[in-house]
Length: 332
Image 1 (cartoon, rainbow, N blue to C red):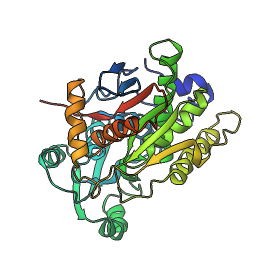
Image 2: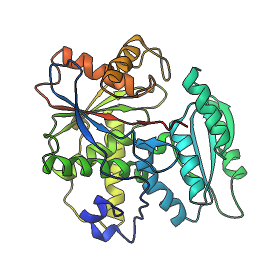
Image 3: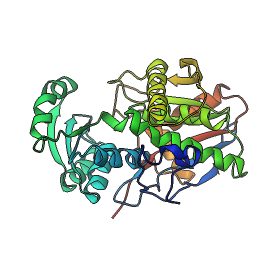
Image 4: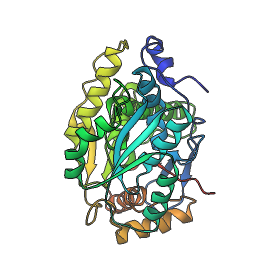
């Protein structure tokens, strides 16, 4: 499949909102055996991406890279932690398509994953700026923009995680794909779709896409980042800005009327903060491994820990529930 489902639904977007296929859809869905009360399925995004990294960031890049080219940008300038999956995916895929990447890196707790990821970042061809803190990153931003301007061409400036309105289209597409799998009978319509929330774009795109697709599934976002405003109001605000982009670029559809109470956001599984390992995440990582999931304790294991705890409390109804596995490492 080379065309996007979003273009199939709104053919008028084909000329105004470019798309670049970087993976092989649809990603698989399967039922997991985790000892939960409700049936739990996984939509496994870990294998998505044809290059040196995979996972949910690749779906965002399918819209962001062609948008960068549409703007004539020669460099993407973005930010992440020192173990950033987003930054590595951007550097690898942008390089394949003739675009440079510059990363402002904020310190996060160091473990084996972060050390290995930092080595991958150093080998990726990206220009790395160690800004250490959120405040210093903000203060350095004007200099970074000037530093990476080519002639009169500014860099394409993107927020952490690629969670801009254009990047958020990646999981509008993902939600349309899930809806197609439900319609085909590959899995039952879920009551909840559980995902980690690190920068908000995945959850916001899912909320918008599920509404467009006509599914009743509710997004349950497990916040794993305490450095950004990631409440329901902010996530729905991002979804609405993405809806505005679709209309501005030519899509015609009735107003969706998204509201903050259309999503459930939980924050009880962050632990001490972003990047900090928690006992619940470690336990969920081990449990996921028994079901064939390779998780990490910054994002995906915390999301699975929340799912397990909420199920035990009876807060997920009768299900079924879909767990979105967004972690896509590549091993040599």
